[in-house]
Image (cartoon, rainbow, N blue to C red; front, side, top):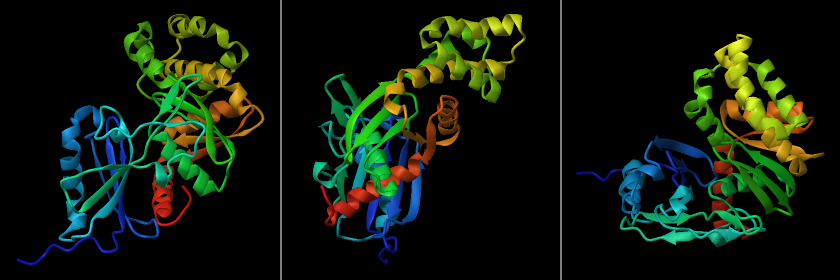
Length: 310
């Protein structure tokens, strides 16, 4: 029986292991993507002992019969305490995702040399991030910047200040989770639609919150009242709810972004909504592709392993 050939040009493997999903890329020595794979096997579905088997199943077709171990650089929730192997947080201020900070993982599979990128923590006020640090490293590398403000919208949004190539401070805001709870579990569930975006309703809600963020809880009920009294449709109500929460977040984060360009990192419509809201607030917002920055960050780590700064 002939040997199974490995993927031509394979130099290393990049992995983003989230709570609900897994993304894997076969990479060449220049940081180019040779192939990719995805899975719904995120941290929430796995025991620590299962990670290696999942990864091997996905990448074995790339490895073939090669005997030399392939470097695998993993970011995200695989490094959490409940993940594959805990990669202890680094203390801010610090450079994000550096080669010298990686945590090595022992594997039974000899064709893999796995390392996990650690997250970042801060003490005052207490906060943590895991996964975002790799996107921040990618932003620093891809945009060739050392200083800036970054908004990373999601279930738990991050607002990050970069100074001298380091994460100097950051804040987590639970806007995405609050939206889901209100839209799915509160009285507003009878009012909001499932997806359509009403730009006018969204922008007006953002404007309302920028003017009076302390009125958020009162304004939330106006979503329900507007549907009952003004015949506001489901899309308008959903967009108003989103705009109220995002607007309140942006108002609270004004000290981070006032007078600065904000890099908005993420995917799809959510990035556009935040950029739209920031522009309503008068900020200069630049949308950034989150997946591209994840790969750029992991590639920067790989390059550093071959002689870059740590």
